[in-house]
Image 1 (cartoon, rainbow, N blue to C red):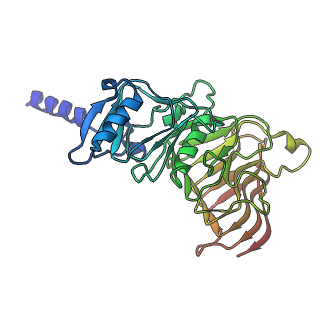
Image 2 (image 1 turned 135 degrees about the horizontal axis):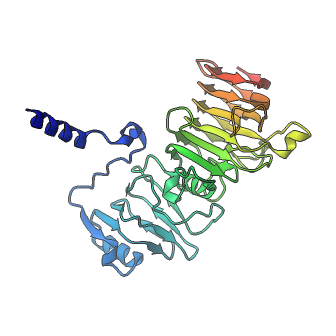
Length: 358
């Protein structure tokens, strides 16, 4: 009987939920290949171009297994009936000044599948277009190393490329799995690769305090995360207005105070800067002044800066140790049925409201 109970316990332990099961929201969706689909390996072809030519000639739903590092040497499309399945740590690299537009599903977890991390390029990039299959875009697909706790790794390029790819699809969700994301530049959270702001962009972390943390390095007078038009901060006449933006479940801070705080109030040194955007929401976000919290120092002038915006809300958020204001609102019109801000905790910060109509 003891032997039976021991064996039963062992069997249960083997099928028990793995350690990451509680992070189910960032486990990749199962991709169900269309009926009649065939599987083929990239190794069966001389190169990417040869694979696309053969698959498009048959026009058959196909799962293309990327089992080795693959180069796309010119501008090309991956049709909606092609599922890209990445295995063996293999990646796709775009070269030759081109871009790869992906219309179909991707079968991959939150690990690197695209070898392209220069966020300032306007060529050699990847975008999603008219793609209903990809609902979350991971910075890890471009090599974000959020799991590296031993040293600082700059994830700016990976995050910005994820934004460009999702924006090419007319909006989408950038999903930050738990970890620390160090960036050396402002994340322009709504821009496509051409620099134009796009509607419907969401930056979403894993629910839970300090789970998904973005830390801006350096002392420049710039926001950590910019949502909206990036040409002029604050917005001016002629800028492009965006709609339906959201930031949720993120922990945002910077590692040192901007130089402007030594002499004057910083107008752009915000945790989140929402610029010329309507129907924009901040939900369950932690904005802390310094990475070394708790500290008496303050590294953010403003927690959330809202400029030239109609309708939106800050909800269930913590804004702590800012130099000037927790929430600064300028030229804001509107609110929500539940109020403009509610259930927020603001410590060592003030609240400045200018030209606001609720």
